[in-house]
Image (cartoon, rainbow, N blue to C red; front, side, top):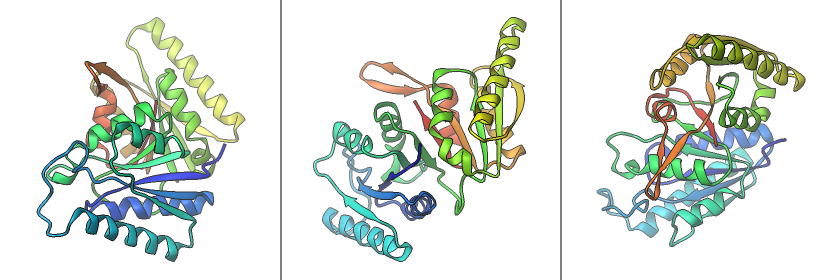
Length: 270
């Protein structure tokens, strides 16, 4: 498995340049084709535009020019997509044509990104593609050198680890953080699953150290973030959890904590 096609979400926010550079770095690393998918969050859902004298067409053209010029400097194969009108179905269909998505964390106080959590949730849950979510602050020029895998033996965790294999193979260090249950019988089973996970990675040529911690509910996300800080991880790999509420997806507590409080990129898969 390898990432041959990447898709980066582009918009009019200040953090767009960081996501663009992040995606171009990944494209160079994997010799991948990069799709720049433009969709301003003012259209997700429709909101009053931010204070900007430029027309939507002018903002779109500026984003296109910046993307193509950055790609030319990097010498990467890219394409530009700005479908309009664009809704949830259209965004998902475009995302399904890529091996890996690059999205942005919700940025508090930026009107242009007020709906980004819903956008990220929708794509991760419906596109059947892994997504790396880039934090709202900081630069990440060489992500994936030191990777932390959040593991609980679930379907989502297994899918995320599998989707991250191309990155894990290139990492200098890989750690597994196992959140173990408090019940003794469940704890023993979880420890066996942890060893099995490490053995599975070893068969892929990936040596992983592992660590256990006990947490409950919302504490689990905090425990993962704390461990990532302890081992100086520059990428977290985690399964994405959500449940349906009426007609929309609502993130699970652990996933929401990771998305709200992360300081390093997080690869999510569902």
